[in-house]
Image (cartoon, rainbow, N blue to C red; front, side, top):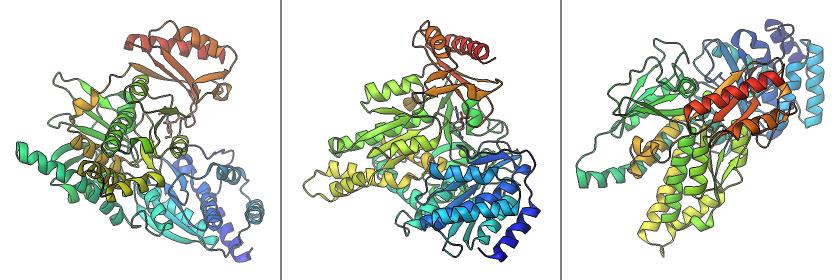
Length: 547
Ligand SMILES: CC(=O)N[C@H]1[C@@H](OP(=O)(O)O)O[C@H](CO)[C@@H](O)[C@@H]1O
Ligand SMILES: [Mg+2]
């Protein structure tokens, strides 16, 4: 490879040296840690993005964000050609690059070997699309990714401030010649806003005829002081006659994700700071990079109620299966909901037994849910924390199109099919997207004539408790069966089984976190007291058996 490129890489490495003793792995969230110790890894990820692009002959995305983590953290994740997360087989290269010593010869040798193995050349075409969230550290980190990728002759598209799902969407559009949508932020808003308007305008017109003009739906949103605040403004501009969004925690005062955002609300089951619970029928929180969404409201007795990812699965599955039935397409497509073990048992029960939709359980982490969702014509997935989306197969899309065009079908059947087609356009199929999911949720509530209370009362959650337990080595805990059962340490599962059997509707599991140095305990039971007690009993067993 060229000496010139090697010299440039040397300069960059000298400018951003790897701190001694640091070990950083490419996990569920890509590379993520404190921002001040991240610059060196941005060099390596820039090189990797470039190689991935050369191999796939497609644009690869690099998103700089640490999502719901504090402002002082940051991270980077790569996005594959169809807007999906980096293929797992490449996480190995990411980890290899991360573990190499900070020595130009070592890094250069590895690059040359990898390029031979992957059969790519320095001059092969490559394109990397970069975007970042609002963290102070983001512009510098993104610039290092850019400089590193350019050493391998890569064309850079810098989208600067974007939400994570916007970049996933943009990469997909770029690579499929804009079949999925136009490859700009304007194109993104155009697609989801036009579909939203189409879907609900007719319905609102009918309602208006029967019960008078309907005012715009009102929502108050906590934007976690992150990038979402800037982007929600576009929804307001385009949809103000249908949806009035008041944006709180917009970054002008508070700190990113500090006592606010979807993660905070889900974890503490209470309203965020900076968003007074007055006057609004519905509230939402998104996270720092706007890929998670949580709804909540206060009932007439001043009680706080939260609607999380499980609730989105139920709502989306209800709407879609209604439309499939109305369009007489139900028998021709395979639909499924994908959850993790953290899904409330009541939601699973409702989906399987009341809605008759199959549920698959997979290990924690969006990539597992997304991957499994591809097995269905309609794969609906949400993590309980509010991250999720729906995937529609080509088979489903062509069946829907054929139904719309089939003159032998009734008007009702064709209307349902066309509503389904428009609904597909609101959804960001590449990844969970708070903005797209918000519009999809509002459209469904309007079309199903469902209030937020009505949505909540579809089923009752089982009380649950989650605990974080610090142990000396979390790898001592090993799991199987989509993390629902422990295989190590010995006897832990027997003890869990015995404790769980003492509680009515009891369920509990233990797994090591993939993102924090802790073990998570989950428990649910018929009462909150029982769920708390079960979780605490399991915590003691975990501590005892991992001493
Ligand atoms: C219980 C829980 O919320 N776990 C989160 C958390 O993973 P852990 O492996 O549990 O730390 O972070 C992941 C990445 O953001 C997210 O996908 C997942 O849902
Ligand atoms: Mg996020």
